Image (cartoon, rainbow, N blue to C red; front, side, top):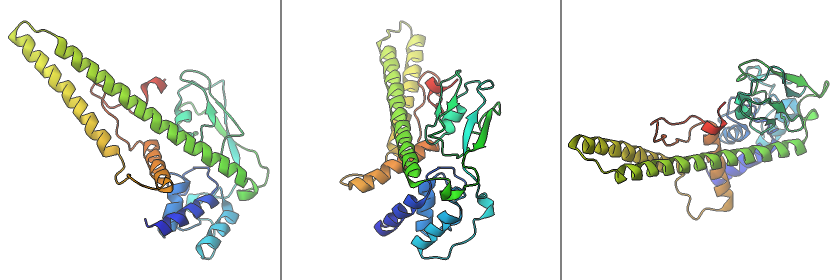
Length: 273
């Protein structure tokens, strides 16, 4: 994407409500903004923004406003998630799904939604295995931008970015922990003093397995690194960081295998129930 298109994407993104609801068919507001900037998506796919949001986007893009595409939802009063705390089993799936960290709780502990932080994206509803989350309308008959403010959108965007940065940091910390664990196991194997030919052969097999796991982890980390990132401007670096954060959110950033199990963890094990 050329610099002019990036600048346009920035302007478009600023007009979106930042609920990160994915109803537009993209993984968040930024990817949808980039698709509109490149002409790959129309401006009528955002139910939270409603008709007023479409009009704003059309004015920026120099096109005629279109009716909201019904395939992507309908314009409705804004709602916030509510957890029936008597049914919550503390599985953490809703926390993992919330794009703006509006849910508080811990594994096997009761969870609760912080209403002032909830954007109403409803992404937490489907993953709940006990169906204890409801979306409760809170704006009466007001819909679209009449039910949402620019200040709220800006705050939601800041929380979204902060969450993505945290996920990237936690993934890097987990990668480093697993790498250190593998190195320690390799050192322990190398320190062993086998007495028989069979023991020496077993030690060599074990050493080869661990070294192969370390090499796979190194290659995955290299593959996950963004290219051409030297001597870039702060704005470009921010876009690189945001792209990597989106990759992490979608689970597209590879993780090294655990040297004990040989498996790649889907999530941070310490966050699993």
